[in-house]
Amino acid sequence: MIAYDAYRLIHLIGIFSAVAALSLAAVAYRLEAAAAYRKGVAMVHGGGLLLALIGGFGMLGRMGYGFPIPGWAVLKIVLWVAVGGVLVVAKRRLIPVGSFVALVVALAAIGAAIALYKPFA
Image (cartoon, rainbow, N blue to C red; front, side, top):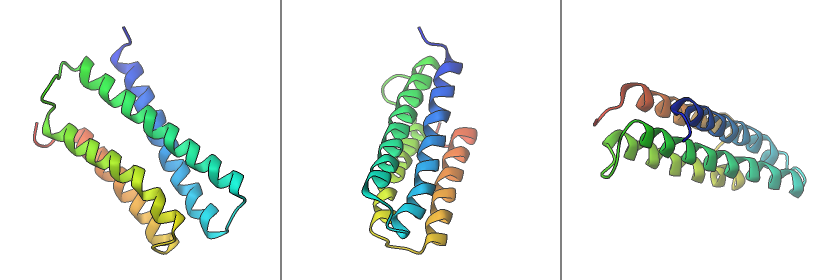
């Protein structure tokens, strides 16, 4: 069995990878970087999301939660979907770069607040 701390580390590595990839995406799509570079950014983003998902559900299991999962975990899943979809915002240049970076920071802050305070427990 994998320990809770190992799942937490996997989860954090995934989150940091996804946020770093979104930061790079803001630059890559604005500068119209080479397709291989944009593909690499998308791969790191997807890999980070996968690690965050695996680590998150692993932690839930180690904390003793089963089905139905608590409300705060549902909020984290919704946030995970939002972080997954925000790459499209960068790709299609729907908002200015500064607003995009602020959106990414806001999503990360919301995720941290949900993890710390666990509303709807």
